[in-house]
Length: 225
Image (cartoon, rainbow, N blue to C red):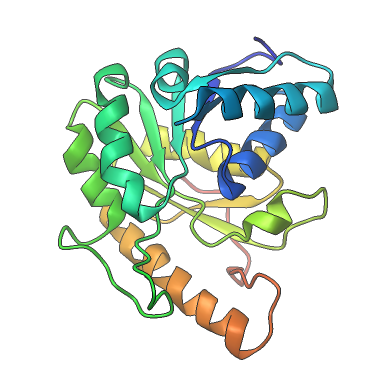
């Protein structure tokens, strides 16, 4: 099941647009990836296609299977599925880094910011998983359909988390996906990026943009997050 060295990355919801795109980027970089899905058959098909593309073996299974095998668990599911999926994987992620990419979009008004009572989806994830899990929040504002290609995606990834070491690990994974990962502070700050997603959806529609993203201007010194 190994494509390279380093931690195993389990992509939960790995047959969806964002999950599949991130898995492909990381597999291409040489990371070991496990594809998870509610449907193990769909996960297997996605893993076989990815393995054929990069001539390596990609493991797959249910979301819980993938989370169990992984060192880093990346949750890429819709807001409506977040609680159920986190409840499913909670028994097998103690002590691990769990990356929550959830954007709290509430159809049909997805262009309106609608943060949950906890303050943001990331804090909701931490509360659901418990203090024994290092939750990091990232990848909210990148267009999945662009990430699924080999083109350069001109988008920064804001990475949030209360554990600085875990946050740095995921910042590096953002770089490995061909993006620029930036420390953006505490997990609670994820509210800003989650809210911004609704604004970007509005801008996509209002200005006919094909996947608006964000870039942080100015020269950034390489200092600790």
